[in-house]
Length: 392
Image 1 (cartoon, rainbow, N blue to C red):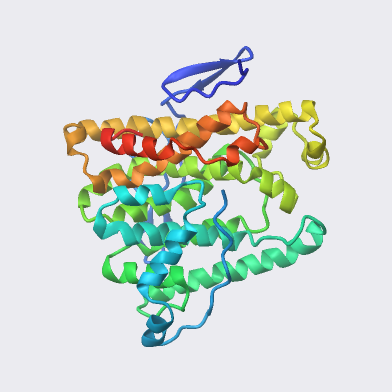
Image 2: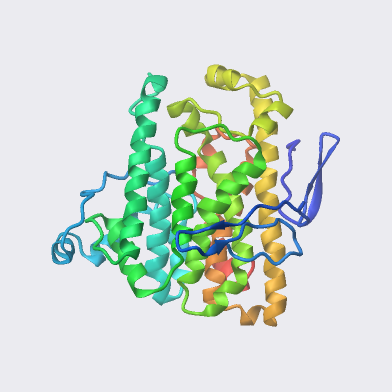
């Protein structure tokens, strides 16, 4: 039996004589408010179970945008129709570890294009912030040019979003075309799109992560903002009731993304992006991981697994907090029967994250286990059960 246990419920876990409480109770931390490009306030979250929070594995290889210059609308429509853009974006999401394609059928019909476009934008931004290296050799020599390329790509997406909100014709790029069609037919908060871009821009060059809270804050900006936009796309204004739930789900998504990308970051980019304070606590040295991971050093793997366990526990804690807050929403709405699809669809994103953490626990928190790359055959059923039961 594994010495590490990640309890996915409101129970405490004691590991190796040390108490590791995985519960719905969170320590409060505060962040200052920021403003979007329109001057709207975008409050950050306070991670506390009983606080109502206001809103505030890799995708398949993507080709470079066919064009970065705007073209006449008639030409853009002839080169790449909305239907073809939707088909491209749908295929783009097939390999995402977040499995947004499994959430689409449970999304209200008027919001499905928005669901596909917003998730595709998140995938495009992730790809843009980490251009693939051709080989693991000469990583240090290519890192500078890679960072410059990433900034240019992200600047393309930033300008594209600004142009769409300004009423300009988007470039002939599939995600841009579908996103422009979505934004023109429904009001959205531009600041949330900008936060998604800014979050990726801040990670260009793979800077070290100071602590777990910094990693969760990245998830708040990159993924909670995405979930807020999904909520805005819903046909019912009641979707806003679950936004504080989306905040914690997004924070968990940011942590899990870092863990799931860990082997790729080591093998292709020579980076160990676990929080520095966690690595220090568990005596994990970056040079040891980079130098000796290929020879299956047991001692290093054990220390690394301890560090991964602590990070994964934080992601799990965020999910438990989200689950507790969802129960509060259910009570406020008068029962699960009153939670409609528009309110529940954005929080379904928690299910693939929970399933991935369960898989990580089964391999004893070994991020290099090949079993983590195998898709869960039961995930579609678990998505359906969550949808029917209104539980995550």
